[in-house]
Length: 148
Image (cartoon, rainbow, N blue to C red; front, top):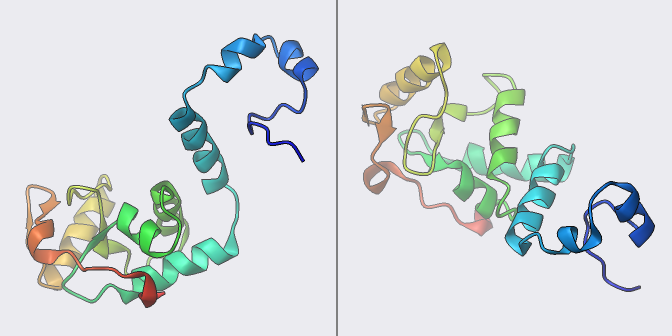
């Protein structure tokens, strides 16, 4: 089967009927196509992927943190950091130690009362939080693929 770009079009006729010029679609940079595809797949239900994320989040010990991107990478789904965030929002507050997952530079990404709750839980575990940020050099857990 011939390879095709996954832009949702199966033929040249569909591209033309969509109101976009075929040449315009092929000029989209590859990284944008990958980003769109990953984002689209990230919102689809995938039990195996979500279970892998859960196992990694549960493996982060108390007093340590990890980032959304590192959790996704350790679970075998690099580029799916948004899927990790979606899962942590979707699961109940007691199902996972969600407070141990922070932004890429150690920032607390939650807003309002959830940010206060995350900060409280991290402080209770012994993680120092200064100005809504965790020092990743001191508190980041080194995740490995074999922890799955």
